[in-house]
View 1 (cartoon, rainbow, N blue to C red):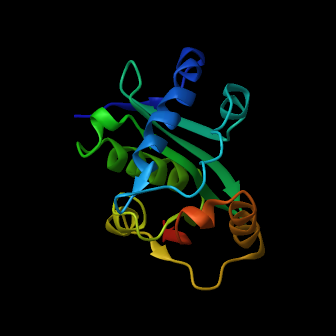
View 2: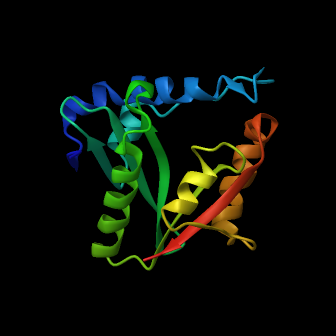
Length: 164
């Protein structure tokens, strides 16, 4: 059983390294090196300022960063240490994020992700997320920012949403 809890001050020390390690799984897609470098992850101060920050394990092996967007919750970042990938940690963090958002009164939760990476959009689809065909202005602004920082050169990105 994976323990999910609210992040504590000490956890903030480890989260940037967890995000960097998780991003390393994207270093090669389809056997090819990425054409661009991924942007740097969130700093400790940015993480500390999150609306909600959930972590898995003690010491933490993964985290979910949640914000508010368009009157709903937004899963800004989900990261799990590669050594713990495929063991249900990411799914537990997603479900805990959805539970938190539901209890906080949000009607939905959104995210943006790579469409064709198996542990991205296809994974989120198994968690109840669907691709958003007509994103709101705020969700579209996130997509435009991702394109501006080069994420679209890594792979096709999609916004997704799950009703709560």
